[in-house]
Amino acid sequence: MNVRARFVLGSLAPALAAAPLAANPRTWAAPRDSAAAHATIRGWAEDTWLLLLDREGARAGRLSRAGILQRFHPAMDDEYELDLLSSRFTFSEDYAWYSRENGARYWAGSINHRNVVTGGELKASLSLGAGWWGGVRFTKQESLVLDRNLVRLDIERRWAGGLVAFVEGTLDDVKPNIDLGVGAGWLGERGSVTAAVTLLDAFSDLIFQELGVSPGIARTARDHERLPLALRAEGEVRIGREVRVEVSGAVLLPLRIRAYDQVLPDAGFRQEERFALAAALVEWSPTPVVRVGALAGGVRAVMDRVPLAAGAPADDFRLVERTGRAGVFLLARPDPWWSVEAWFERNWRPERRSGRSDVAEGADYEDRAWSAQATVGFRAPSGLVLWSALDADLRHGVRGKGQVPLAVPSVRRNTRARLDVGWEAGDRWSVVVGSNWDLDGDARGDRLGFDGAHGRFVFYW
Image (cartoon, rainbow, N blue to C red; front, side):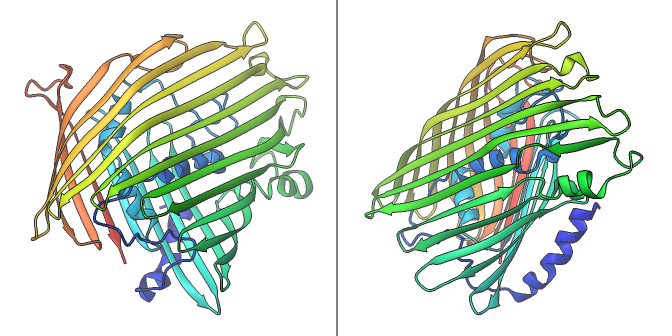
């Protein structure tokens, strides 16, 4: 167990012992009109924000030529996106998670005969008295492109009237990777809004440029020639009884960093970076048992790198990565036993790399997809839960086949049925396991059509 994992388990002990606790001021209030579940885009926005906040959580690393988003890997096959879709928590499960201040959840799904992708979170918050709160979050993500074990701490102060101020930070065993942030917000009965500014790699220049690090410990040093500041804001508002709106955004102020060999300082590169994220969701409740809505999100990351005097010519390029999505959803609970969740979206992933030397690689790639999921759930009074679903990822390559690292081009029309079974105890915990069944004729070597398995659990206290 690494340093961050050991720390978070020790930090959570007093919080677990203190349950049940009062609500965390920055946690979204659970809705009173909960006959039907709600959707959220906050999970996608949070995962995308972490691509900037925790650059070392990418398997290729902070200074990789693969960029900031790092979406592709040579081992990805044409069903990788479908495997993620079938395994992750649903919109309504995400909303329930962000409505609670203390909990643990985990999901895992098969991507081939050997490997799974996983994601887990732990969070705990407790009152420190006199309006002060403390919280800890641990995020674990393992996939072909991520190896994340991130601990975040926050201290916040709440005043009467809904005003909140907070400080937050990440913990890492490599001290230059630690981030620090400050923010403020307002929370009321009809909604909430928070905004924060984060100093990325807060101690990097102090450690590398002032204190110094032996080349035997770190051969490559970093020098931020512009302050690495990121701004983030998010909010939720209810308009009347029928409409709810979520917004989330983040932007990295223009950043320039120099990475150089401490033994040969002219070997390395200088790099400028940009990052912008925006997401929004609108939900309408025509009746207490039906929610319909639309969502959209996008992120753009730019890396412009030039070699130093003795740097590698391959480090002379400009990389622009973009991901976008837009779709609609339906959530319904016709009676306490039955529920329906469905969504349908268009998503796209362009990537353009412009090499400025003979050896700097270039690329102009884009794929697009229609992705969808339709789920029918049954909840028995005993706690038994049954789900049946149809998942689809109809993806095609627009241009640039072979120009990004993919084992098999993502150009197939992938569909599958999903059967899940589990057990739950109200809103306290649930455990679900399931199987995937191929509908497009390319099951992974199974003549019966078995196409992998998955599971997830969540606990609240």
